[in-house]
Length: 244
Image (tube, rainbow, N blue to C red; front, side):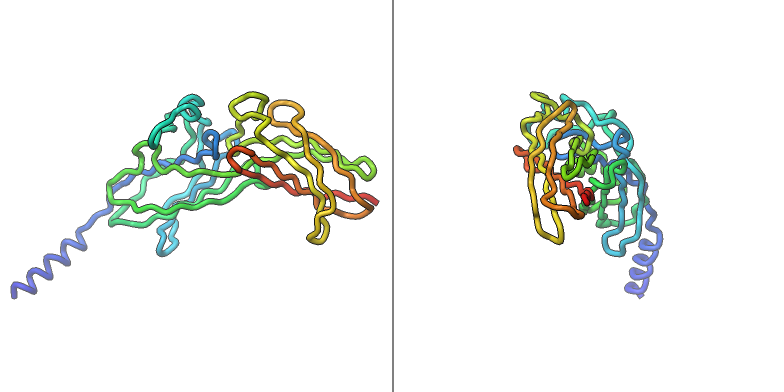
């Protein structure tokens, strides 16, 4: 009889469990730069239950790029880089039990040709808000490349604006020094590379210019590749060019 009563008590405790509101704050920071927010269209955030894939919450980061000094000059162990000005996605989950949550971030949304997708997982406890420090901080590697290409006979002339995912300015001697960025144009056809030409820094913020000659008449993939030579972060943008 005692065992039956104990089992009944456990069953009652299980059914009586209630979800606890649990706040989650997500910040997305560009590698070696600032937070990705409204100025770049934000980053799409999806929170899922890792086991079932059920969507728990979704939205877009909104707000500014954050405090430059706080982000770029703070050192030490696990520095807190976000403040109220930093773009974020905020939500409240109803959590009944410990749950493994998968976060998917995709952006920046205003530049789909340069957007990438990253994911992370973490355990969340009922009532244990994910807001301490920087909350749930996700790093978005990559560079945005926004080109203008014109054809002059057999020559493609290129002017490409390059920027970190946050839209931070690349300038000579600045926080994101132009001299640390290498931009190259290559021509491809049927999986083979036919030509390569470097682009030189032209005008701030972040405009690199140059030209590449088509080896012969035809249609080619123009691939623009940008790399920060100090951090290794990269971006690629493709364009179609042709000459008769």
